[in-house]
Length: 440
Image 1: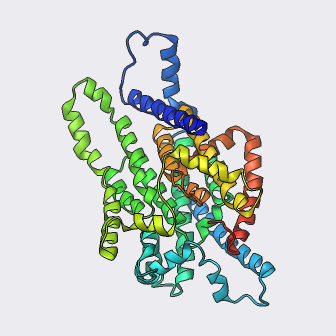
Image 2: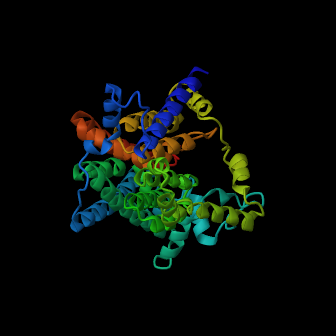
Image 3: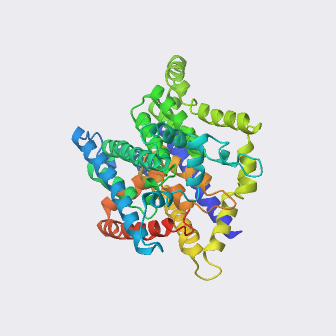
């Protein structure tokens, strides 16, 4: 009960602060009796967050090539790492290519591979297409790449690597333009070598979803609303949380085009122009979700079949975040120290606390749209009643890595800890994953 209250205060308090900041940035005036006070001066200074960072930096084209190929070669290095780790711990005398590739077809990867092979009816359980709980975009990309690379597993690994490196270029571009080149480098580094960053090079959808989030954020930042709408559809077809990309888009539009200011001035013509020329594109990513529901209806006869399969086969349902985290806290600190504690419960709790702390920090120091997006993404991702993939979900919480990179830039000791500890932990968890430990 106490945890529920504390989390509610932190989450809703941060939400209220963000709403007030967004409204003021969009043109809301402070009450007249506050406008000339010391509080007003401090508050307006608090709102001007762009002064705290180096904005407008434009990276050279060769920098993007360096980012792409360095992150792509990192994925190749992780494959070589996997081969060495498997050879060291396997029971067989010789590692065959087919056996090596099959090591990646574990946990949820089985479902993505089956969808890529023959659609949602490729694998059935009790006569039901239970893989409908997985969104289609990543598997569709694998199917396309498999035209060139016939082995579906190898095609999937190549797809993941290409999407991840492309996403890193987009992330670097976004962060460099808004925070400067040094923070951009750290954001890419922290993300690439994070303890669970190996998932970007597996047969999972993280790399594709990450790429689409970064592409959407890039178009939002450039105010290219038509292109955002197309990218947003694909983002919504990548993961259930994909539809949340509408949140930063709405905030960007609301703040940039000063909606509250124009309402105060009764500039109805300007408001209407901003709506039909720009805002009209922002809800379009919902089309991706509608397409996914249509696929459910076509395959299973029920647009919401995936919810039923999630509940019955994956024991996933939604509940209030406070109740969900109380269960996670109990799992993390009861029953001694087991493999589930170090692979699931403790890392899951750590990343939640990290994300929530960065949301509170971001409300004071960072862009409203990024902070609001991180808060919504974290709450939605952690509101499952039986969450076991929290660390993996937080890999694609892009603002979290941006905020962490900015902190690392400010505090060198923190940067050294992250730089040294993250790759070590990634090696440990990746090895465990390859041998089907409960790292999902």
